[in-house]
Image (cartoon, rainbow, N blue to C red; front, side):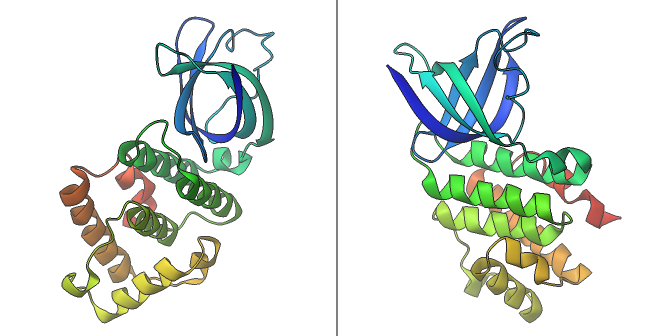
Length: 216
């Protein structure tokens, strides 16, 4: 039976010399993995349609024996091409994807997470990559996971508390209007790092690289 979905490509990796495994984030099927047979051939119908953070409508045949489903057709909706023009944008997108992979189960409906990641990519493509986007994404993801910090126990400075309140309330596109002082960036970075280590077991891969620019 063939199923249809809309999704964002979280990661890809070779399966054979000619085939590719494509991991998707979809609203209704959650995170799913598909095999694109022949995708690495020069005349493949998948050519140019399967890359990191591409958004597409696709169809697949669900496997009865494994978590790898057969990809049938792909119709591109958005390539988010500006991510490939700025290494920090790409690092921030990769970190957000790693956060989702680490903290969610496969094949579980994730409509809110899909919407958040889609909004994250759209905002990242349209703006300079700033730390407040990463922090806002982390805060909103922690909220979705039911792991929002107890801010009354956080012992943060008053200025940082105000920034956190704004990051939580604003859309991702609107957080670029916030101005963070260097000490606020440092305080938020350190607090969220420690919080995620305690509650998630480890910080999702790529966080340091996603914020590297602001260490200089």
